[in-house]
Length: 311
Image (cartoon, rainbow, N blue to C red):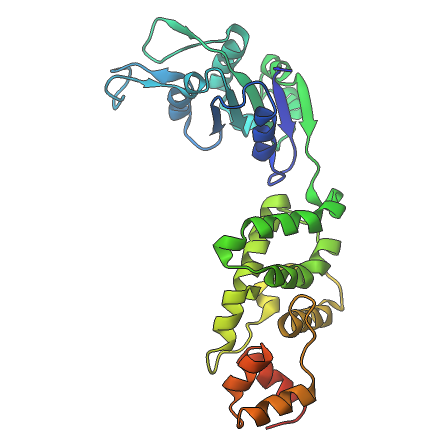
């Protein structure tokens, strides 16, 4: 159906992604998808951006005028993000556009017909804003035709791990990740998938995965381990999300998980004491050569030797 949709949910739940999905699954796919954040600009600029202006409409107006986003979205979809932040003075203009399906540029006396599908989104309680007089009731009821509420990530915990794998796989080329590195990062972050509250929702998950890719990925691990004098970073400092879970055993759990991820990789068995000593013997005591032969970094080799009391 080509009806107006209102997406609600906490910040970071992926409202724009859902809006794009609705557009791509509609008869309007292939036509423009135009997104605009109603909280991003001052009131005067919002009016010009949405509805356009004629030449000379105001000081600094573009020569020849400028089409608004509604015109640019003609035959397609316009996505109005953070609709709850729209200034009250502009809410009446938006209501008229939605009712009449035509826009009038600033400085123009002629209305332009438009054919757009409107998807709006907000993290605020619009009904509460209506009760407070901060949002027009008629605009709210015009927008609230089909409502989709997006659940926060903490309420769809079974989706976190597969979503994380998808996001990491999508970014594998950007961060130089192999399948083993993806498995290593997912194993390290597993306690968060199970217990963390995800206040930033999918956006926070995506950023956390990028951080894990940088510090736990192949290129980062090789660079860190193959330089003399450089040791593993303080993972608790790099991933404070573990501490925020509030579990007494989080430090021990993190240390074990990090050690497993670093030494064993994704499903790889860590070398034993005999493996290390034999590799050192074959390499004439050269630790750099022994670490390469074992497929581990110098820091990992040093840690294994220290654990066995070898100097």
